[in-house]
Amino acid sequence: MVDGLSSKANHENVKSTLERFYLNTTDELFLLQIDCKKLGDGLIYEDVDGTNVFPHFYGPSKSFVPLTLDMVVKAEKIISSNGQFTCSMLN
Image 1 (cartoon, rainbow, N blue to C red):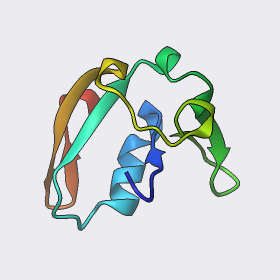
Image 2 (cartoon, one colour):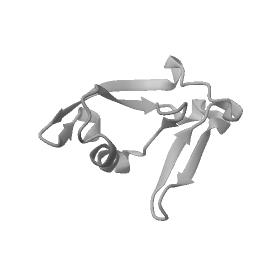
Image 3 (cartoon, helix red, strand yellow):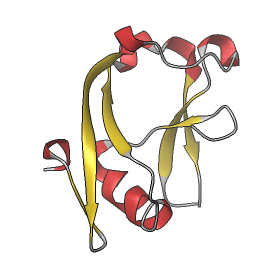
Image 4 (cartoon, rainbow, N blue to C red):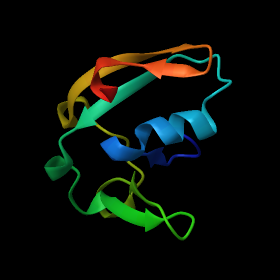
């Protein structure tokens, strides 16, 4: 989470997001599968660069309330090695 905004990505753009923003991170990363129906009106799809649309979660009614555990269907640690990211949910 950055500045209270939780950045989400669809399955198709997770790898490119990892490569673009997290290639040199030393932090642990986790991929979460979220039940989008539970996000309500807090889930907004935004055009970020004229060609890519990313979902962002701002909390109910844009209240910036964080995700709750009941919204998470599955979580898995992402392994980073030599510029490659692996996780069974990325396959």
